Image 1: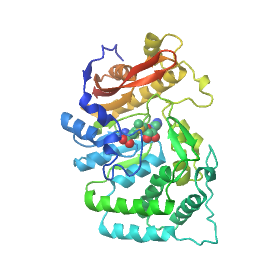
Image 2: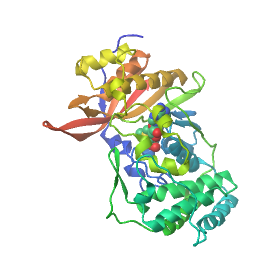
Image 3: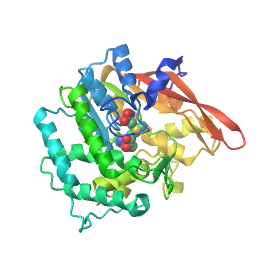
Image 4: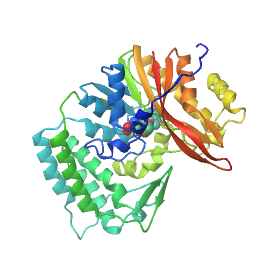
Length: 397
Ligand SMILES: C[S@@+](CC[C@H](N)C(=O)[O-])C[C@H]1O[C@@H](n2cnc3c(N)ncnc32)[C@H](O)[C@@H]1O
């Protein structure tokens, strides 16, 4: 490890909007499952062009598959990992190759999964750690969703089942009383909700149309559940990395997407899943995070925040240190890693995540610069509003 240099900042305002999901909200296939934390495909295309990136491209926090799908359109092979089975399912379904026979099979199976005996209630038991899902839906929608989910077990073709599952998961926000509000789920009783049966049919129709009009056939990416802190990939096998880790903003993906995760797998071990996530949120017992082990993280944080740094910041950067170490290891010499992050305000302290992560990357021998895309204004008690950057850290091995 070596000492680090001053961080170089470049204004790249034109990339700012691409660091959000907004531009892809209406983009066919990219928009199959709404993931507020995603960035947009234009960012991937811009980076690929600017650095002349060839495959394989890795996204170790693949989310709903923006990187592998954009790479597929650019004719680049890719690899994706994510700790969340929801993210992996959505990314996989969006990036598969489909033919006419498959689409016909989806149409006929979609009809079947909607059929049910009105005298019989579905047996699917939907268990969710935060609240009883029955409270989150009008009774008719609750029955429809459990019926579809139960019937999905009888779909023989695994790819058809995955396709229909994504359609079902994607309609949950519109057919439930649940609102994702920052890092928490709220049940809003007077929220207007759509009819689950009609929305499911409509969604399938749209997904089929998207595949027919915009689907392309190219090497399917290798997307799997896995941890960015322990990539099971060979040294130097990756040509470029484009990614965005969880931000240090107290959003627990296993909670805000918990309803979806519990619908995919009613026996899911959420606690174990949570343990494997980068620690970007406070969880039970996090007051016991030990301030030992990562001396470099401790040094960088005390330099900026003093001895009373928020514990979660120490945990976050310790985990991100492992991520950067892994990214450096799997990247070929000369390869570029582009990492989108947002700075944070915690306990009234402005935490410059882009600068700290760039410093950590320098310790692993990377050359870095920070492209500043935009500024958000975070509410800070007493102080009012503080501008915080959203940036893309460019690291070259
Ligand atoms: C900001 S989102 C990535 C969104 C992605 N760029 C997209 O466009 O969809 C961060 C992702 O990191 C995942 N994640 C959190 N901890 C992880 C870990 N240890 N290893 C791999 N993925 C992790 C979350 O499940 C989430 O999908």
